[in-house]
Image 1 (spheres, rainbow, N blue to C red):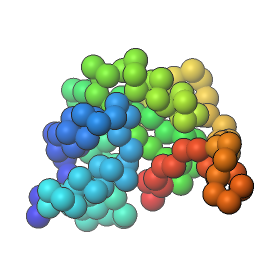
Image 2 (cartoon, rainbow, N blue to C red):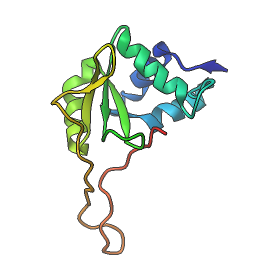
Image 3 (cartoon, one colour):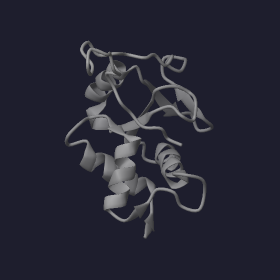
Image 4 (cartoon, one colour):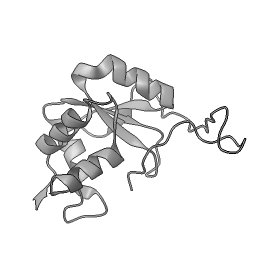
Length: 139
């Protein structure tokens, strides 16, 4: 089984972004499973995914990165640079912020991490409100 690389991460986001401009981490992990690509590698859970993300940002920078907060449990996603405006709009709708690799660490565009908020839909199930947006935990 191949281990996820920056090129494979871009391939996953490219394929998955045909349906949506903002591709969530859980969708990339599912893409990896379908394509016999290991998102974990030798490290912690999804370590190869996080390494590919960082290596891609250090290299060609073909992807934009978005997160819902600064904790390890924050939801995370990517978009192709070419889909920037629509991906930023989708991320803003979810309350996610954009990050950029500074060469040493991930910096939040706009200065700080988004404050996670619960957003509820109007109807819900059986009259109870339910979250309007679902995501995935990176860890």
